[in-house]
Image 1: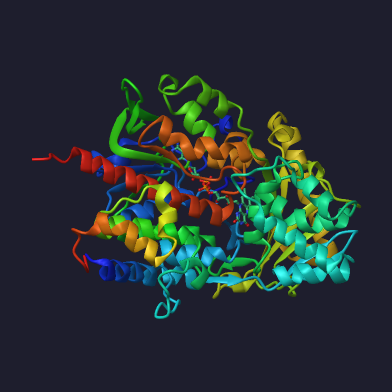
Image 2: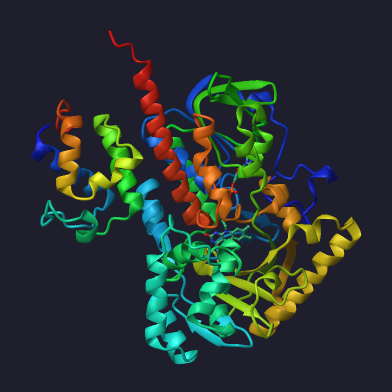
Length: 87
Length: 505
Ligand SMILES: Cc1cc2nc3c(=O)[nH]c(=O)nc-3n(C[C@H](O)[C@H](O)[C@H](O)COP(=O)(O)OP(=O)(O)OC[C@H]3O[C@@H](n4cnc5c(N)ncnc54)[C@H](O)[C@@H]3O)c2cc1C
């Protein structure tokens, strides 16, 4: 997966967690929490979905890396380079 | 047996009644597998929610419950005459809606609805509230004469409290800092939370900060359909997600695999039967899980010491009133916090001859389609006060409690006595008997229970605990969310285990 695909994969996951949020205007550099209503349980769900869909493990200490979409892409790129999109 | 409590309830375990518990018969386990990814001990909201999340993640899960009903303290019982009593459906925060949508189903979430009326009736104030942040501000400023700025700075302070930076301040000290000498303000801010999680003015302020922000902010919610409906639906979800469930099965021991460094969980023992699992999640009481179900040789002495020192939370008393068929009640509110005590203090909330209690009124709207009314009165209680009573004194004390509660209820709804067909009481002994919680604890442990609960898997790889602990992880919402938090860790553990077991060639 490339950067764009990873960001799309994260957005797809967020859609299932927070179906009422409009994700079309999310900016990549800003904290997700500041743009849409996501609490710490939601972040846990993102991590669980990443594991389920792509087999990626995000250790608890690294959750903070997922605060922005940009952070997600940077952190996940090396881990998901070999994953296929729409897994 | 359809009802959870035996007639006149509250027979302690040694009296010989099995009341819902039964010796595990081997045929209850006849059709289960020999090995699971995860075995969950106990079907409280934490255990059930964890099982459901793991089942949905494609893991093989076995959920074992010692009682006939699933749900743990989220329970109900039926009585002759068509009465259904809910034990812990007084209310929960709005967050339960989201939790149910995410970890259960949209259908369950859709039936989580707000209460219409919450009231306080005591010598210091008599008022109705929507239980929202704005309304608490209005009450504090307009009714109790506090400065708006001070109220706002109290909220800001609570929001900023950091879990990892516990100052050592108690709740009482926190209140004195912001509202010195104003016992009425302390009562308003504390009473609902004391009933919701058993915390007191002596508990760490941090627990208050976390709970207040979740609970006293957007109203109080309930489940339309009653606890029986909720648990029935959850059970269907579990089955459809492939979880094997068995009731009437009491787990005796958690079996561990001795190792050089640490001992890892490898399954559970039910009587003579061993069932293997890669991970075990205990939803039983924290202390009984660690002190009674494990080989102590597996644990570091410091850890055992820490667990022994964990204090349990208080227990409860309840009085249940069922109105005869055809009788009706005017709407007086859904939840009423009452007290005849002039001032507020924490210990007296647990008094055996207490003057403080909450009333939950259940109208037909609770169970659409039913025309019945019930009233449940609850108080916090100390197990020690009830534990040693002989049978005669015990029955007498229960009757006294029923009579005093009824007198108080008459004050709220004059004439109601004439329509009451069924009245019965539950005590800390009842709660202990039915949930196996040490001391009949209603809300798990005090704050210090949180750490050993969260870190158990570091002592014993593959063994996890979820369930009300540490004050902040209690109540329906806290327990359910804690189940998910632990499920996520278990999922990660199973994932890593599978990877390391995969041959590299
Ligand atoms: C009177 C009362 C009123 C309450 N009111 C409210 C309320 O209005 N709102 C709210 O949010 N919360 C309320 N609570 C608190 C809430 O009900 C609990 O915090 C929550 O339900 C606890 O869930 P839990 O997951 O910790 O497990 P529990 O409910 O404690 O369940 C544990 C389960 O494990 C089973 N078990 C234990 N040992 C074994 C074993 N060895 N083998 C097999 N099974 C075992 C038990 O039988 C039980 O079913 C109330 C509690 C009480 C007592």
